[in-house]
Image (tube, rainbow, N blue to C red; front, side):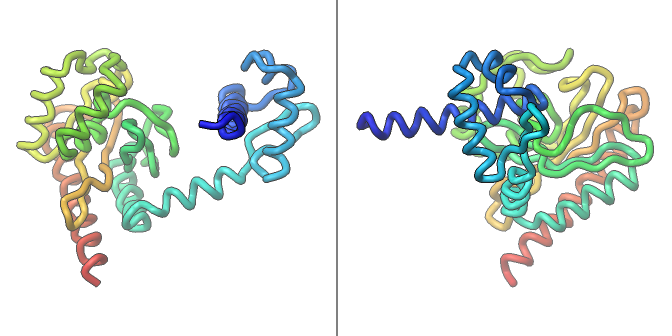
Length: 257
């Protein structure tokens, strides 16, 4: 790699670090961002100026914040997912019918990404907002995706991401995870028993396209004291499997059409 190419790559990397800092700090002054990143204030100022020029950062007094330009890009990325309008409709319906938090996640860079979420009238706040990322193996929807992925892809993800325990009941070994994924394949859906967040249960199932490729997964999450018994083991799985089946039929017919 030539010196010029290395310099351009480093500049781009620094810009993304500044963006990440704006997100992590929920905005900040040049001095605060500089201190957070360990960069010279002149460097931070230069990258912020470029971000503002291209409408990816805004200035409010002395503070800088992430701009809605990222929302434009993010919405474009989200709508690349097959059948997104139908996915949104199903999530909204699940949230309304169950009264809990419903979501659709996809796998990207070996992580789960919340593509769309909605909450029912009884839902609790869990921090599962659109765009949030996390480990696949600690969530019901994430495990459902892993169970449907090609074995080589699962190996790649686990080699890169590892198994760092999240919630109180998260799996901690590959053997334990493999056993869990086998059970998910047999029954068609996955459980999350306080593996992401203490006190929260969830049920999820994968959605595939006409070629049996994983599109993502639907899930419903709620407090463990309410999502329990037959509601947890039978009622919610039945609802989610019904929704995933309808989504898969819609996707298959869309391709055929």
